[in-house]
Length: 177
Image (cartoon, rainbow, N blue to C red; front, side, top):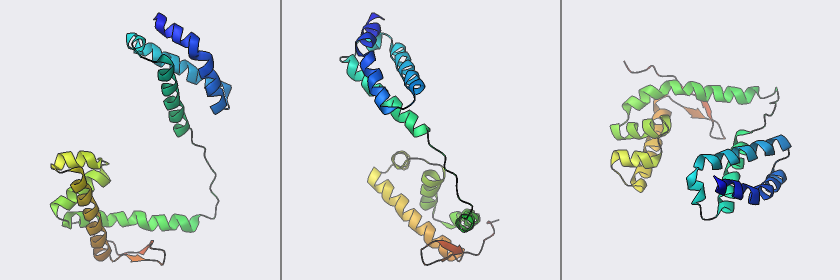
């Protein structure tokens, strides 16, 4: 592992300087550097075959920093006067009670697209492969299914919208038996 030690000796100080300019906490910088070194160690002999060790170290460090920043979200206290906002979401959340019945009334292709992509989180690329479609056709199918679901929910659940287009009221539907 001499190649890792040589690369670390050559580029470690520069990496630490780079990290210090992007992170305010020196303990976080130390953690990032340690994790980066361990990542290089886990590469083993593959690290020795890297054409440009400096570029590899900086690329991995940038990705690790981006991951840390993505995870480290700051929490913000919400004001107490958000009751009206919360009530608006309650009506939208309770509208989901209409969803099973309306889904059962959709064409099988539409139901499959909505269930797989929107409810189960399958990517449209994976859906395209599963359905034997090209990506463009799959995206169109999902979009049309969403439009038909919205139209059917609006009609079947008697959804009324306010001036801003937010759900104001609806009539719940019992699930299909």
